[in-house]
Length: 131
Image (tube, rainbow, N blue to C red; front, side):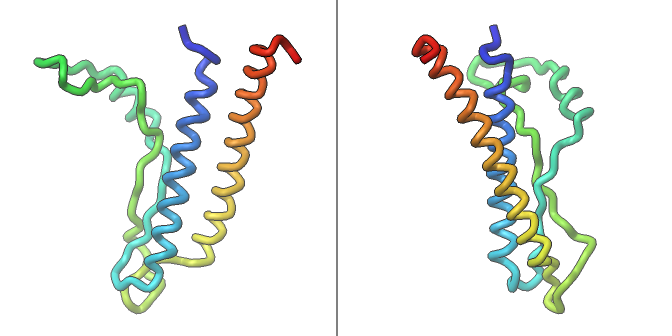
């Protein structure tokens, strides 16, 4: 039985994505003067690839082996931008874009936190009997 119809799990995965994106953007900004540093980006994985990997059954020869179809699948991956160069030292971090992405991601993260707080607030009201 899936409690909360998967909403909490979806919000959890979304928070994981937003946190990874924040770490990646912060890392890009902190390496703005690092020679030959290539900016990284967090992107959603291809839905088709996820569907294929979900249907893949692997033979486990030992119960301690990790299952291929675990409950948690990361919905994002980190890519490196290699096709641009903004600085003379081979670095391709665009500080204006990174700062805009950081602000956008912070708004997204806060909206997720507000939504999950609302879910838990509803649960708390139900547990208290509607008070």
